[in-house]
Image 1: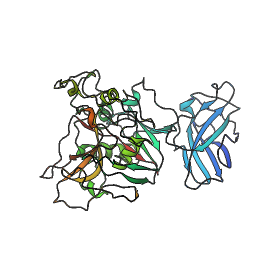
Image 2: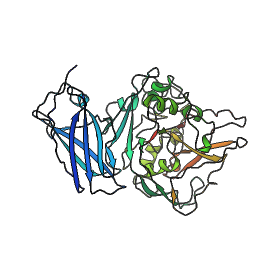
Image 3: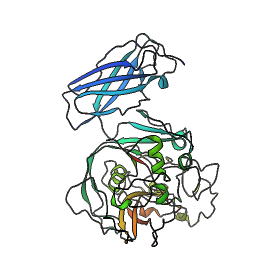
Image 4: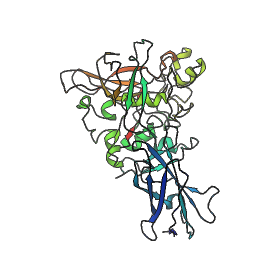
Length: 418
């Protein structure tokens, strides 16, 4: 094994706060990882701070070596010592240096900052575990790895926003203030067919063209296989190990793996915007995002359809202001929030500020429950596109069995950060 020789040097980095101290300790004299202890003082107790680490040494890249393979969350909160673990051998294999200096850049974290959690699915469905890392670098969209064998999630800070619409649409809810009190990570794309295969081992989607299916969103999967429906509407049910969420939670060791709540979904979809769309809505843009084959009167009955119709490769269209893709078009997305069957907007928050809302009913096995899906799909007309559009989706049949999937329905993953 190649070894890393480090000279322990402390350095105070760029900071927007009162005091920062940095110390660097190898986990063992010739280890591949180093512990970077960052001590903060004079900070706001509830403010999150992004800690960006950069190393300098003889022969290092211009601007220094920026840490991209962190094994601990690089966003911290509160005064005191915070431990970050840097997998240095991953970022600089074979490095030997006797003049190694680490600088910590500490700034308040915002939703536009690039802080990612990456789960490695490459070992496939038989793997005992899926390792994960943190990164400051956005994925290279020219490389399909981020769509296929890795799952990229971006950190979103806690915050407030206006959920719903004041337009009176039957497919939304009344505008009201919502506060999300905890930070979370959300997948930048809907889950793809290849990511599903790497976890679940099969290819269930309607669009089967092997030349382009890997980066398309997975669809035609039931909520039962995605998360599991037994008791989910009480808000307390754990996903089974036969579900995507359950397997990912078990093999990644990340207890917070979940589907986003409806409020989390819309908060990220809007990305600080307040209008009908998160872009300046032009007809051609709406048409592109919806990708509906029915727009020109044609259909997509051919399951072997290429990328000219049906679902698109995720990330094909521009991101929203926070760097997330495919909230409009491609596939609608499940959120684990309950709704009575065929109730478009019967559940309302009212006008008061609501913290961390999640639709939930008491356990009542006699009620046929449906769930909520957000966004619009490839098969819908552009007029349905908006940040507040919501639909009910039947998760259980009248006999209590799982409802089958649909070629317009998919999902994206969320991970609690706290």
